[in-house]
Image (cartoon, rainbow, N blue to C red):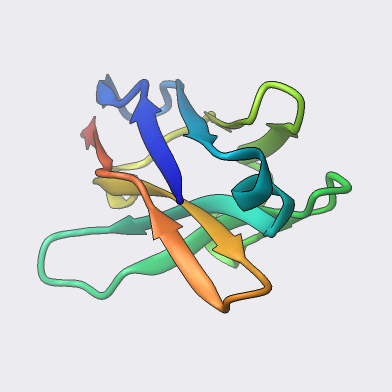
Length: 120
């Protein structure tokens, strides 16, 4: 089992920045099975959508809507994933959820989520 805990959400004005952190914990064996880690978001009345994922090797992929504004990074030794968010827009308002993919068991771990609100 892997547990994910997010932090760093909050209220910011349009054009502002926030830094989200996700700390993972669990057994050594569980982490061996973890491949991609990243962030999804869900706004009220909308489906959950991918924001960014990063591989164990540090290769990142982003949703088109956030390219150039958000940067994801990963520290495997510290078991953390960081999402640096710049030039935030009201449409970025959502609950942001940390995700870790167990490639062997085809299972997704999720955090509880952290609220990001961008005021216009």
